[in-house]
Amino acid sequence: MLRKYDFHVHTSRFSPCARSSPEGMCTRAMEIGLTGIALTEHDTWWPRQDFRERRKKFPGLTILDGVEISCLEGHFLVFVPDSDARFKIGIASILELRGLVDSHKGILIWAHPFYMSIVGCLFS
Image (cartoon, rainbow, N blue to C red):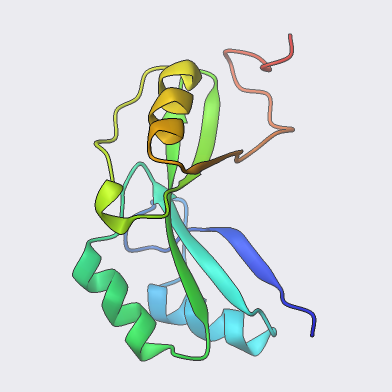
């Protein structure tokens, strides 16, 4: 069976660039046939209790806990396997973030690989 996920989802609850409520985003994800989503708000981890409530409210949708962290070099999606391993947001560089994510056995994904920010591309 084909499984479809969106690993880069923001909601209006914590990300000013988003227009959809958490409930609206989860409902829409199910309507379009997604298996799951990752809530990756800008520089904000979801409060654990609120996150658990989302999972209970939408049992047919896999909801992963993540965060989009802003660094000097751009924005990066972070996922850690242990929900207690959440760390303080405020990383200054990708090198610092990479070390922190590695120490928690997490995953780091460049959120906007083709977006050129004022600090330039990582490959310039």
